Length: 195
Image (cartoon, rainbow, N blue to C red; front, side, top):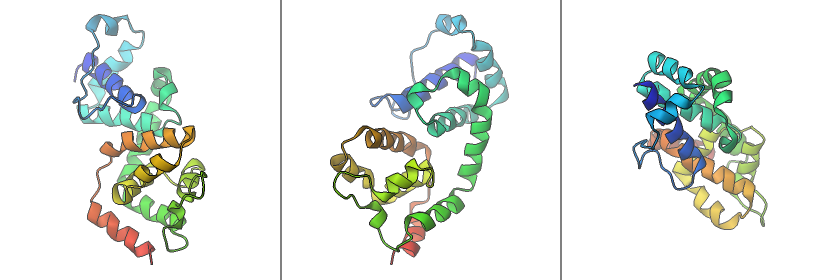
């Protein structure tokens, strides 16, 4: 991958996580970015270094990790990625490598009553599941996996009309295509918790 392609991957992943209509997979990561605009950037040397040290897949995962772990992808600045991006990427890789273990640990918190009560909405208040995520007791990866299994975001999108849920819902949906799981395996895990 050359430096311009690396820069385009950055823009494509950023657009994916920050724009409702842009889909990295649908458009195959295609974005408009000219060589002239790239050479005007002060940080182009960082993209050049990255293109020499990482594979195409690693570059994509690097940016996915940084936007997924960001508290607000809209405000994530390239300077922050340059400064702490590698450490975020390493944390993300560890989480992905221990995904099943982390999911089981977090299911212990979610399914403490042995049922689906953590998913229930009372009035217009956030369900326990969302509160656990917002308090950093449950990871975004676990929400994505549970949504792949139980499709709760569709219901929440209809019943919860507030900016916090809308932001969380978009983050789940945008991150979901990058989390690859064996659905049968994770369904079996969830069944162990529900009585």
